[in-house]
Every structure is written in structure tokens, then in C-alpha cells.
Amino acid sequence: MSNSAQVYREFLTAKKIFETEEKNYLLVLLKLLQVVSESSDYEDAFVTYNKIKNEGNDDFKRQVKFKLGLHLLAGAGCRKNIAKRCKLIIETKCLGFFPAKRWTIKHGKKIDYGAEEAYKLFR
Image 1 (cartoon, helix red, strand yellow):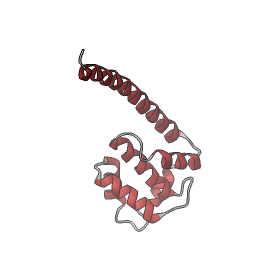
Image 2 (cartoon, rainbow, N blue to C red; image 1 turned 90 degrees about the vertical axis):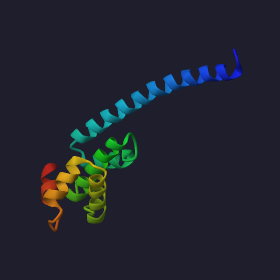
Image 3 (cartoon, rainbow, N blue to C red; image 1 turned 135 degrees about the vertical axis):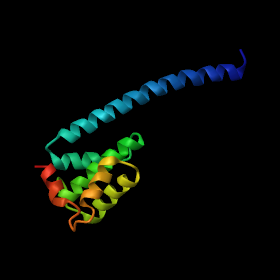
Image 4 (cartoon, rainbow, N blue to C red; image 1 turned 30 degrees about the vertical axis):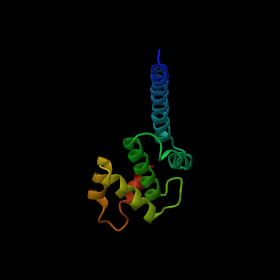
């Protein structure tokens, strides 16, 4: 067997291991998102969302950033931050996340950008 064939076999073995571990990583990440989303400990949820906002695929990142935006909008587990929340919600809207588009259409022209409605989501 040539050296390149041997290294190619190593590559294929490593690729299978990587794909399996990547699937496990994504499954655990989705499980974490579900647990955090269902939590009533908003401060812990906000901190966790902040930690995982750049993990996973693009769809996962959009979901987490939108949830961070709603937390900032409602002041759920964090201080209200108008600039950050607008940036996150508009960013996810521009990335094609439908709930962010819908939120922007419904609340984008309001002075509070729908803060009262966001607050209701957490109560």
C-alpha cells in the first residue's frame, strides 16, 4: 500500500469519528437550548445564551441571538439594553430568521420596540 493510500485511510477513519462526534455535539447543544428555553431562571438563561451564541450552525445562532434580544428587550435576567437588543433582533432578521422578521414588522415602529410584549413572554 502506498503512503498516500495509507494516509487517506487514516483520513477516512478520522472523518467518520469527527462526523459522529459532531452529531453528538449538535444534539447536546440542541438539548441545552431546549432546557434553557424552558427555564424560569432568566438570569441563568441569559448567561447561558451569551455563552453559546456563537456555537452550532447558523440557524442555531439565529435562534440564540433572537432569544438574547428578547431577554434584553424585556430585562429578563439582565438589564434592559435598547441598543444591544435592536442589534441582535435586526441581525437575526437580516439573516432570514422568520420570528425576528415577524417581530420587526409588528414592533419595529414602536418606541419601545415591543418591550412590553417581550416582558409578557417571560411572565
